[in-house]
Image (cartoon, rainbow, N blue to C red; front, top):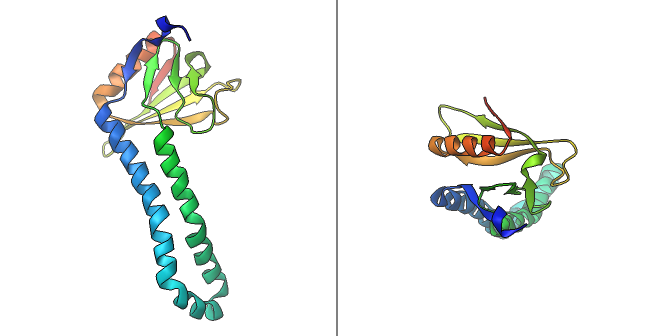
Length: 165
C-alpha cells in the first residue's frame, strides 16, 4: 500500500475498543484459570462419580482439561485483534486467521442490525470470490448509534452497499 492510501475515514472509538478487548481477555483468563482449580478440588469427587456416572464424568474431565486451550486462544485473539478503521481501499480483517486486510472491493454488503436493548451490530458480507478470509459472513462488532452513521457514510463513499435491518 502506498502512503497516500493510509488516510483513515472512520475509526472505532478507543473506549469501546478497550472494553471489547477486556471482555475477550477476561473470558480467556477465566477459561485458563478456573478449570485447573476446579480439577484440583473436584479430583476425588470425580473418582467417586466415575463409578456411578461414567459418561458424565468423562465429559467433565474433557471440559476441565481442554478449556484452558480455549483460554490461550482468546488471550492470543486479544493481542492480535485490530481496531476497526476504514481506509480508502481496505479495512483490517477482524478474523484471526486470514489476510491482514479485506479490500473494500471484496465486500458485497455491510449490514447494520438495530435492536432496542443492545448496541448496533455490524456484519460484513463478502463476495464469494474473496480470498481475504474463508468466512464470507463476518460480524465486525457492536457500535454506538453515532458511530454507525459515520461508518455508513464512509462505506457508501467507497462504493460499498450498506443495509439496515
